[in-house]
Image (cartoon, rainbow, N blue to C red; front, top):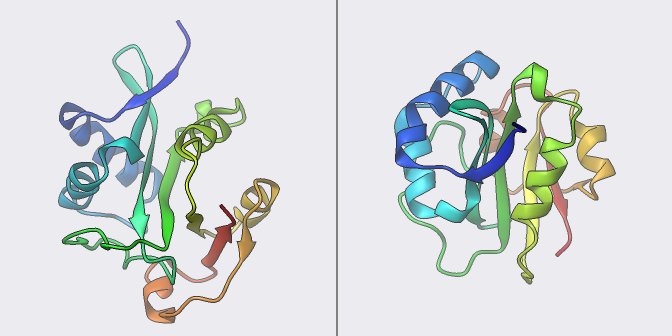
Length: 160
């Protein structure tokens, strides 16, 4: 059996939070953050599953395009007129990395023809990966929001 991406379900949320805590120990996010993102943008929330084991997750949602939301914050609602599709996170367990899973979910999330650009926060060491997928550094309207992602975080965008 091969690992495959599928839509995140409510039942997946505890495992997604546990995985996020394991993969991002210095940038924890409350379970409510993942639950809200899934409720607001269910098609943007995916899990990489191998049987009943989760190997990764991806979270994306419409956003302003001017910068990222604060890390570990509830959105409340999505913008009425979003300026971008914001890729909040693609996270994989080490054993699942290097097999094309991140690129596959990125293609899937961006397959819908949309006039919106895609934004993300590149954590230190990941900028070159995102550049290979067409992302470039762009100015951020609120540097304090970007700072919540840690020192060296970069706001990047890819045209529609």
